[in-house]
Image (cartoon, rainbow, N blue to C red):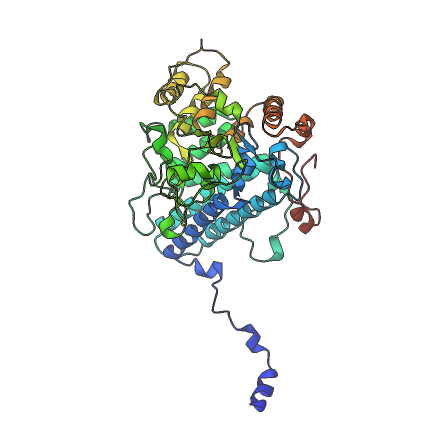
Length: 481
């Protein structure tokens, strides 16, 4: 034995043995079936972004919803979990870092799938479609990233070693150019629908999803004519459900109104847990929800009184948007949009609807501008809500009317902050200053410092300090931080 050990110790060949418990990404995605498995991992990463939380609060709600005038945060909670609500965040904020890391993980996985397609063998049409799915997912995540942080490192190749880890930031315009290119190519490669079975599961990204997201992106960057052209291609492909509350009912996945959803399925250990943080525990008990609700005195995310008061009392969307707790310790409005009565320890069977047909109608109306057709599109959405038609003679400017309809229709679906960013920056600052001052004074007895919403920050979040440090300053911090 000693002799054998002596002999083998003279060579270091044993150090080069391939590990048997892992597969190199570039060698694994070698055929069409493996490409499908690869893009499934990108979908899983998107679900992880939605599910990732901090102290029970989903990070996307911290960054998108409580940032807006639709939702507030519990300001008796840990400071960094509510900094984003007060525009007082720092580059070391953990929720910001967590969202940043999760989104870049998805981008890298999508890049790996796309890069592997050049050598993968098998059904070329299937490989092309998988690449379209990966590009859709990459585009959506880059859209979120640039909305939150502005200029970004532009990564289109997988990061396999340290050779391409450090990149300077590219402009928002360059990021949008990649997003538009990805979505244009995805729309051509993706089918209108899926039939089921391995690799053809319903719920994958479709051409309609790519076109709808492309329309949203063009609208966001001010290209209304381009947005109109794209969104007209989606018109008539889907339809509004008769009952608003059915859109987010547990198990009612991929309905006639749905264009793209993030899939959750407790039977596959991928149930959604974040929605339980939206409701008080006594409401969960009254509804018989086994998994319970939040026991907090103040919910970590809750509807603002400003949003509640803005609804017409006759609006049929109210029960499926918020409720009022009058008997528990919380006592106040709570989000009722995502309640699943069958939620248990495995989570909720509610898919998160990212894009739906009502969004197409209201985006197209905004892109067209004030005319009879635009009001007809708006009134289709209002009609389902049981509200009377509006027209040019109705109070308010056209953009105010569109924004109000979007606020009521998409409350807590991660749209409001994105919509506000299409307004002039001064208007956003005025809206948020007024709402936050009222919210803090009424609920927490605090006075909001309006100077915290600093124009020089351009309403962006700080780049995580860890990214700045790792890049040795190559990645520059956003202004104002």
